[in-house]
Image 1 (cartoon, rainbow, N blue to C red):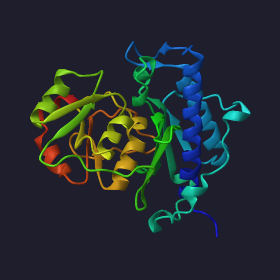
Image 2: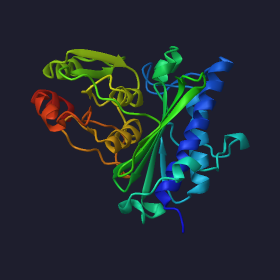
Image 3: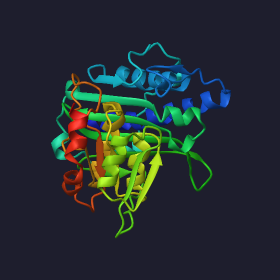
Image 4: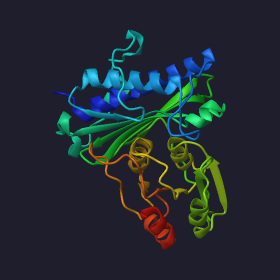
Length: 305
């Protein structure tokens, strides 16, 4: 019996994300980050971003040549070192049963969104626990699977790095999701892009606490780890590669990730990259539509304009 494509793409993404994470650690150890500014000082790219993306895209495109892969760092040179090429699929993941509705999906219906190093500014500032590698798997226009790898997560046994995955209809792996404290409203939001509009949206939700961290992947992990109830970002600063994997992982657990109006983003191959309407993510225990309904109309209008 042939293994469904979605399972194979996920299984290779799990192993590839971990290899990309080890490249990120190697660049940091060498000490020369090779920083360049993409669109100003708040949008940086390092040697680690470039190398991790080459590793991911070269590995996936060799195995799945008909899958559309979109990476944050643009077109990559796929002529990479042999030690960056991952061809082994994750055996443990392949022991799971594929959800029925995903069994027959053809290779050309997949779009993979890659953020090789989410939290680059935190990486350059030494806030390494905020850094994640994100590989999001969409079918046509909807996010269905995701891998979030944390290169600097310290395991209790002393090893470093952890892989968290989610596939809709199957659930999550690599983490035991916890629920945030009842009777509170803890919101996670941006650490470095706090604008008056972002603040206005936060104030409207009357949070009992606000946690400011870097990276979309790390923010969604705050929800999975039971540290926050919602992730709110009233800004067009995020892109599809920031949210595809986190959305899939969160929704595989039962949470929700949409724009601030409560509408899911499309992850089709031809969409614009910017998440113009911001990000709203919630844990399963709270009503996503209730939270979306509290976002002030003038905030939504400002994002639309």
